[in-house]
Image (cartoon, rainbow, N blue to C red; front, top):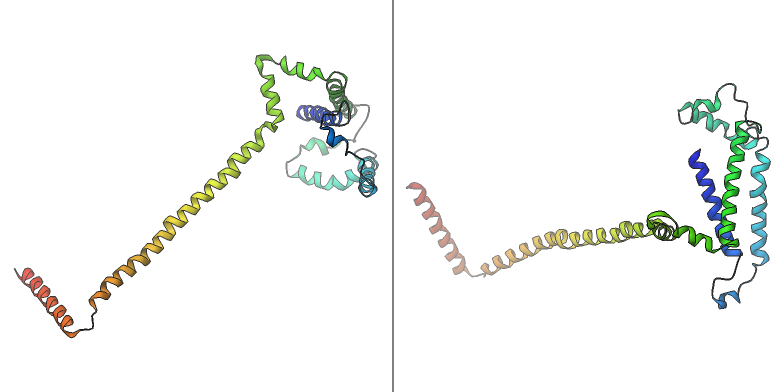
Length: 236
């Protein structure tokens, strides 16, 4: 729950930071772009409105009453199976669980979540609308001089894209080049080398086939001499 609460604060903060930096304050882009900015036409706005209305209201309408609405009934079997499999604690579906109560733990957790989100929105408005210099001062006041480094890491998305580019993109290229070299030089080299060797041996033997009887007779005589020498050597 603590992690979820921290994430709720961060989500509210950076979402409204994006909104405030985009739609509040002075224009930060080039003048040429400002002169061409215009509202989208009906073909763009109408589908967005049609999608936005159920997006905002569907969860509220289908979720009333809490833990007893259409959404809860639709997901109840899924959560029940998860509880039986040991994924969820049994206390969620334990006997005596009477659902959401505004005056109680459920309401308290709801108020804490809403307050944390509101705090994130307020901080984003204060830093990027009321006092734009506050964010820079806060970064400078971080102990041990870690502020600028943390800011750069955040701006660069914690270097996830750079690591991905280095490990997977460039690494993949290096691996593919190494495999290509091995295939072209070693595999193809072995196959081509065997072919070259067979051709060289065949070319050498071809020269011994002259088609002349005297040459063949000389070869037979030389072979007999070699055989006689071998027998004589073995007989000794």
